Length: 222
Image (cartoon, rainbow, N blue to C red; front, top):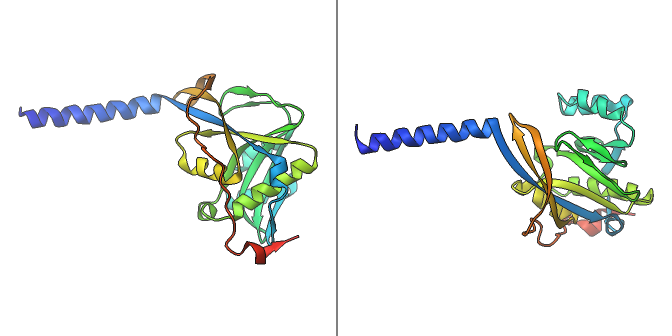
Protein backbone atom coordinates (compact mmCIF):
# COMPACT_ATOMS: atom_id res chain seq x y z
CA UNK A 1 0.00 0.00 0.00
CA UNK A 2 1.43 3.37 -1.00
CA UNK A 3 2.24 6.10 1.49
CA UNK A 4 -0.38 8.32 -0.19
CA UNK A 5 -3.07 5.67 0.24
CA UNK A 6 -2.18 5.19 3.91
CA UNK A 7 -2.40 8.94 4.49
CA UNK A 8 -5.75 9.16 2.70
CA UNK A 9 -7.20 6.36 4.83
CA UNK A 10 -5.80 7.98 7.96
CA UNK A 11 -7.37 11.33 7.07
CA UNK A 12 -10.69 9.67 6.26
CA UNK A 13 -10.91 7.79 9.55
CA UNK A 14 -9.68 10.86 11.42
CA UNK A 15 -12.47 12.99 9.99
CA UNK A 16 -15.04 10.25 10.61
CA UNK A 17 -13.92 9.96 14.24
CA UNK A 18 -14.06 13.73 14.71
CA UNK A 19 -17.61 13.87 13.31
CA UNK A 20 -18.68 10.98 15.51
CA UNK A 21 -17.22 12.62 18.63
CA UNK A 22 -18.87 15.91 17.71
CA UNK A 23 -22.29 14.23 17.54
CA UNK A 24 -21.76 12.20 20.71
CA UNK A 25 -19.93 14.66 22.93
CA UNK A 26 -19.29 18.35 22.46
CA UNK A 27 -18.86 21.61 24.30
CA UNK A 28 -19.69 25.27 23.85
CA UNK A 29 -18.90 28.52 25.62
CA UNK A 30 -21.61 31.13 26.11
CA UNK A 31 -20.82 34.77 26.87
CA UNK A 32 -22.96 36.80 29.25
CA UNK A 33 -23.92 40.13 27.66
CA UNK A 34 -25.95 42.96 29.19
CA UNK A 35 -27.66 46.09 27.95
CA UNK A 36 -28.85 49.10 29.94
CA UNK A 37 -32.57 49.54 29.25
CA UNK A 38 -32.40 53.26 30.02
CA UNK A 39 -30.03 53.79 27.08
CA UNK A 40 -32.62 52.30 24.71
CA UNK A 41 -35.43 54.71 25.61
CA UNK A 42 -33.90 57.31 23.28
CA UNK A 43 -33.89 54.98 20.27
CA UNK A 44 -36.28 56.20 17.59
CA UNK A 45 -39.66 54.61 17.07
CA UNK A 46 -40.12 53.76 13.40
CA UNK A 47 -43.31 53.64 11.41
CA UNK A 48 -44.41 50.05 10.87
CA UNK A 49 -42.09 48.51 13.50
CA UNK A 50 -44.14 47.20 16.42
CA UNK A 51 -44.34 44.36 18.94
CA UNK A 52 -47.21 42.17 20.08
CA UNK A 53 -47.26 39.93 23.13
CA UNK A 54 -47.77 36.24 22.37
CA UNK A 55 -51.00 34.85 23.85
CA UNK A 56 -53.22 31.83 23.27
CA UNK A 57 -55.37 33.91 20.95
CA UNK A 58 -52.55 34.87 18.55
CA UNK A 59 -50.40 31.75 18.87
CA UNK A 60 -51.46 30.82 15.33
CA UNK A 61 -49.29 33.70 14.04
CA UNK A 62 -46.23 31.91 15.40
CA UNK A 63 -47.39 28.62 13.90
CA UNK A 64 -48.02 30.03 10.43
CA UNK A 65 -44.65 31.79 10.30
CA UNK A 66 -42.50 29.26 12.14
CA UNK A 67 -43.99 25.75 11.81
CA UNK A 68 -43.00 23.43 14.60
CA UNK A 69 -42.75 26.12 17.29
CA UNK A 70 -46.31 25.81 18.58
CA UNK A 71 -45.82 23.18 21.29
CA UNK A 72 -43.00 24.79 23.23
CA UNK A 73 -44.57 28.26 22.87
CA UNK A 74 -47.81 26.94 24.35
CA UNK A 75 -45.88 25.35 27.23
CA UNK A 76 -44.03 28.60 27.92
CA UNK A 77 -47.27 30.56 28.08
CA UNK A 78 -48.24 28.42 31.08
CA UNK A 79 -45.13 29.40 33.04
CA UNK A 80 -45.35 32.35 35.40
CA UNK A 81 -42.86 35.12 34.66
CA UNK A 82 -42.25 34.27 30.98
CA UNK A 83 -43.36 36.64 28.20
CA UNK A 84 -43.20 35.99 24.46
CA UNK A 85 -43.16 38.86 21.95
CA UNK A 86 -43.82 38.90 18.22
CA UNK A 87 -41.56 41.31 16.32
CA UNK A 88 -43.58 42.96 13.55
CA UNK A 89 -43.02 45.11 10.47
CA UNK A 90 -46.26 46.50 9.04
CA UNK A 91 -48.02 43.70 10.92
CA UNK A 92 -45.82 41.04 9.26
CA UNK A 93 -44.11 38.70 11.72
CA UNK A 94 -40.32 39.03 11.33
CA UNK A 95 -39.31 37.23 14.52
CA UNK A 96 -39.94 36.71 18.19
CA UNK A 97 -38.17 36.91 21.54
CA UNK A 98 -38.85 35.43 24.97
CA UNK A 99 -38.30 37.40 28.17
CA UNK A 100 -38.05 36.02 31.70
CA UNK A 101 -39.04 38.35 34.54
CA UNK A 102 -38.39 35.81 37.29
CA UNK A 103 -35.63 33.30 37.99
CA UNK A 104 -36.27 30.10 36.08
CA UNK A 105 -34.62 26.88 34.93
CA UNK A 106 -33.13 27.25 31.45
CA UNK A 107 -33.30 23.85 29.73
CA UNK A 108 -30.86 24.76 26.95
CA UNK A 109 -28.09 25.38 29.49
CA UNK A 110 -29.38 22.96 32.13
CA UNK A 111 -29.04 25.62 34.84
CA UNK A 112 -31.03 28.02 36.96
CA UNK A 113 -31.02 31.60 35.68
CA UNK A 114 -31.20 33.91 38.69
CA UNK A 115 -32.69 37.38 38.26
CA UNK A 116 -32.75 40.43 40.48
CA UNK A 117 -35.96 42.41 40.81
CA UNK A 118 -34.84 44.99 38.21
CA UNK A 119 -33.42 42.48 35.67
CA UNK A 120 -34.93 40.62 32.75
CA UNK A 121 -33.43 37.77 30.75
CA UNK A 122 -33.79 37.56 26.96
CA UNK A 123 -33.56 34.18 25.22
CA UNK A 124 -34.66 32.26 22.15
CA UNK A 125 -34.34 35.36 19.98
CA UNK A 126 -35.44 34.32 16.48
CA UNK A 127 -35.39 36.60 13.43
CA UNK A 128 -36.40 35.48 9.93
CA UNK A 129 -33.34 34.94 7.74
CA UNK A 130 -34.34 37.56 5.19
CA UNK A 131 -34.60 40.22 7.95
CA UNK A 132 -31.39 39.59 9.88
CA UNK A 133 -29.23 41.99 7.91
CA UNK A 134 -31.54 44.98 8.23
CA UNK A 135 -32.46 47.41 10.98
CA UNK A 136 -36.05 46.26 11.55
CA UNK A 137 -35.32 43.53 14.11
CA UNK A 138 -33.08 45.88 16.07
CA UNK A 139 -35.83 48.44 16.48
CA UNK A 140 -38.41 45.80 17.32
CA UNK A 141 -36.05 44.50 20.02
CA UNK A 142 -35.56 48.05 21.31
CA UNK A 143 -39.35 48.37 21.51
CA UNK A 144 -39.39 45.31 23.80
CA UNK A 145 -36.66 46.92 25.92
CA UNK A 146 -38.61 50.17 26.20
CA UNK A 147 -41.67 48.24 27.35
CA UNK A 148 -39.77 46.70 30.27
CA UNK A 149 -37.96 49.92 31.13
CA UNK A 150 -41.32 51.65 31.45
CA UNK A 151 -42.41 48.76 33.68
CA UNK A 152 -39.50 49.49 36.05
CA UNK A 153 -36.76 47.14 34.85
CA UNK A 154 -33.20 48.41 34.36
CA UNK A 155 -31.12 45.67 32.70
CA UNK A 156 -31.55 42.95 30.10
CA UNK A 157 -29.01 40.17 29.90
CA UNK A 158 -28.54 37.18 27.61
CA UNK A 159 -26.11 34.38 26.84
CA UNK A 160 -24.68 34.06 23.32
CA UNK A 161 -22.39 31.45 21.78
CA UNK A 162 -18.94 33.02 21.41
CA UNK A 163 -18.52 31.31 18.01
CA UNK A 164 -21.83 32.55 16.60
CA UNK A 165 -20.63 35.64 14.75
CA UNK A 166 -24.10 36.68 13.62
CA UNK A 167 -25.44 36.59 17.17
CA UNK A 168 -22.40 38.52 18.42
CA UNK A 169 -22.88 41.19 15.73
CA UNK A 170 -26.60 41.47 16.41
CA UNK A 171 -26.14 41.93 20.16
CA UNK A 172 -23.38 44.42 19.47
CA UNK A 173 -25.79 46.50 17.38
CA UNK A 174 -28.36 46.21 20.15
CA UNK A 175 -25.89 47.99 22.43
CA UNK A 176 -24.96 44.99 24.59
CA UNK A 177 -21.71 44.88 26.53
CA UNK A 178 -19.68 41.79 27.35
CA UNK A 179 -19.35 41.15 31.11
CA UNK A 180 -16.52 38.60 30.58
CA UNK A 181 -18.64 36.16 32.57
CA UNK A 182 -20.22 33.13 30.96
CA UNK A 183 -20.88 29.41 31.07
CA UNK A 184 -19.28 26.33 29.55
CA UNK A 185 -21.59 23.48 28.61
CA UNK A 186 -20.60 19.86 27.99
CA UNK A 187 -23.14 18.00 25.85
CA UNK A 188 -23.70 14.29 25.38
CA UNK A 189 -25.76 13.44 22.30
CA UNK A 190 -26.44 17.22 22.12
CA UNK A 191 -28.05 17.27 25.57
CA UNK A 192 -26.39 19.33 28.34
CA UNK A 193 -24.89 17.09 31.02
CA UNK A 194 -22.50 19.52 32.73
CA UNK A 195 -22.71 23.30 33.00
CA UNK A 196 -20.36 25.53 34.94
CA UNK A 197 -19.92 29.27 35.20
CA UNK A 198 -16.63 30.68 33.96
CA UNK A 199 -14.72 33.95 33.68
CA UNK A 200 -13.33 34.69 30.22
CA UNK A 201 -10.29 36.76 29.23
CA UNK A 202 -11.33 38.11 25.83
CA UNK A 203 -14.60 39.97 25.17
CA UNK A 204 -16.63 38.92 22.13
CA UNK A 205 -18.06 42.45 21.96
CA UNK A 206 -15.22 44.93 22.14
CA UNK A 207 -17.44 47.99 21.85
CA UNK A 208 -21.20 48.19 21.27
CA UNK A 209 -22.16 49.51 17.84
CA UNK A 210 -25.24 51.37 16.72
CA UNK A 211 -27.16 50.53 13.55
CA UNK A 212 -29.26 53.32 12.10
CA UNK A 213 -31.73 53.37 9.26
CA UNK A 214 -30.29 55.33 6.29
CA UNK A 215 -33.39 57.58 6.32
CA UNK A 216 -33.61 57.79 10.10
CA UNK A 217 -34.70 61.43 10.33
CA UNK A 218 -37.36 61.07 7.65
CA UNK A 219 -38.86 57.82 8.93
CA UNK A 220 -38.69 58.39 12.63
CA UNK A 221 -42.03 58.97 14.36
CA UNK A 222 -42.61 60.40 17.85
